[in-house]
Image 1 (cartoon, rainbow, N blue to C red):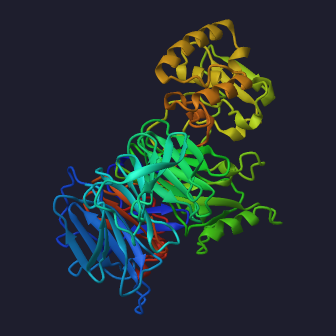
Image 2 (cartoon, one colour):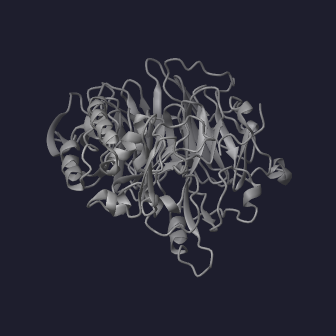
Image 3 (cartoon, one colour):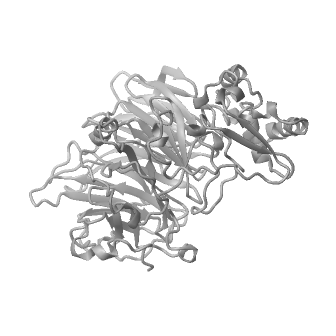
Length: 608
């Protein structure tokens, strides 16, 4: 797991880390930054962001990188794991006055060796279209700031389009532009196109077609990031109000929502097959949401501060045997089951799913790999495994990275309530929706190497055990009440339940767990869904003990300043911190002569 080398090195910056597929190594010669390599004083500046494009030039070295540092924007040839970075020769460099670049995106459809279209969003609200190869500035949108005066938070080309792009702002508004159209010299007038729960979409009223084509108003507070689904049909937005909202982009309709545990959501990404969305934010968690079921299926806890970026690794696919797996990230445990690196990206998951029911006596399981970086300067890698994705199927192997602590040794004086049937405790609730009460406490331990006391949905069919009685904290009471076990308890437990409800209701403004009757819960869900303050304990935001808790495969401190970038490429992964250093981490076996096989079993990264 996280602290492979022991606690004494927790604060040291790592230059390599080990997962089941091998050793990832930092390539110091492939570091990109400003030409002087001086750490950037990041106080009050916007996050460093990185964009990649491949221009398919004849030399075979078609990768290009763009990054912003403070008021500056750089465009380089990206040599990745092949050659050292040459910072003395940027293809293009721009320094802006009065405003700072905040985000950027290449159009991959139109990119050639002679021309690329790069959109750049700015802190004062403008959006610029530039060609860093031709060194042209072709257009400036929202130039007079008549459309929106707030900071641009995210800009992306609409998938499959050579001319449409979408821009989100700190105002909570999103605008659809066409590069062919002008913005007009007066503030736009709008008329309502569609309205729904906490969102509205307007069209621009004008005699001639002008930008913006559409104005989306989404949630409350800043719209921090959005991401298109792999097929381009859906749009996932995360906002400062803590909501993930997923829209059908063309139909302009809301597909589903999810609420953070607390605080704003800052980042979002889709799985390669579009079935899952991961969001991160100010609750220090990564939350996995099922697009098909419109519900939270897991949370991941490993960061100690806000999560700034989440990203799926399209290139790492795994087919694991049914043997129990260790929680550590060392190689020795996995010599016989090395992961297979698939390059068919989106289709890889489908092929793995089809192999689930193979005739082999040892079943094969599917795993999605994703990563996250945060303001705690840590990189976490996560595996979303079959036991989380298909909790209702018989488990083919023991749980991996979803720790369950059994309450088999309760404190002295505790009452043990044992139910052999999950339906006995739940009335009309199905066993699948009811977690087993394995939780000794709902508080999350901060150390990544400690087992988390998370109850999981897959234990619903097992024997449920709840500990209650003198000296046990309110966390257990909460857990017990939430699953309706309290009705079988002693009189003193019932009295404490009454007092706990009164106190808890004032603190959390949550009504979702007051009643143990499923019909009452359903009624409450419909009432509380519209009020963000009353979402805890509902489908929008299940309690911590109601969903599986993932643990990171690795959790490494890799920078001095907060991390702002995580991108998975075919032979490496790229991170960047607020000091302006863009780091390349070679995947296992991709370093060439620098990689020696005898280092594959080293327990921890080397220390700088």
